[in-house]
Length: 337
Image (cartoon, rainbow, N blue to C red; front, top):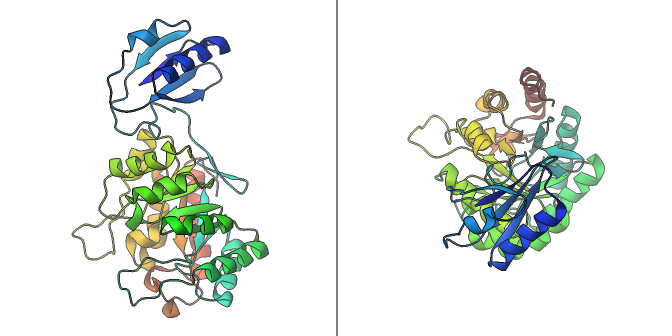
């Protein structure tokens, strides 16, 4: 339920409503605009007597929230959430372009890639130090050594780091290096991990599971937000369908749907969603045209030698082309890049 306060309700009236909500055993989510304050009532599924709140001074009305996700709902928080990323606000007018290799493989590889994507216009550096792989015999990442190499690349280029934590015990370690902690598609419903990253004090990039619905994605975001961390970036990275010509099927529909349902920023991963570098630029442009707040793209200086996902990685010159073409689309939809 949300409690809509009257325009210019006094601080004392707002405090009295908050006190009544908390006295009933519920938590409060406060959204204060220039003229109006909205008080979100967060709790279990017990029925709430709306009349007790509607009778309080300064209350205009109460509105039930029927969606299962509360904190992520635009009903609860009408204004866009802007997630900080080293001076950039993800969700603002400027697109976030997060780029780098699937896996950190060596010092020369990550430094060369970081320099190239920085020059082309990237705003953040991605790279996996811990890699979830289908086969236990595939390259699993360099671990903390990979994080240290990412930090060196950050220090040389100024690009903040976006990298994945795969387990609860990795979160503190990753948080020491990363500006944003990524939760991969395979862990979208790892609720213990979501609770832990919600407490880590870092923004979270949450990827949609390959067989998950939009509502399930938002419920996973709710886990992070319920721990007090509202800095969540949602990522559409393709879902598994019967189509065989691409690795996954990019759900472009998800972008405008999410922008309507939630205040959280939305980015698209055209690399994983297509699985083929030839389609990445086209899908990236489609994502921006649909309203995405950013992109996360795989780039590798030598894709044929990559230890993971080389077939979907752009060479640096192709990434530069992507940025140029996306910039033109962004301008057409009143964004910058």
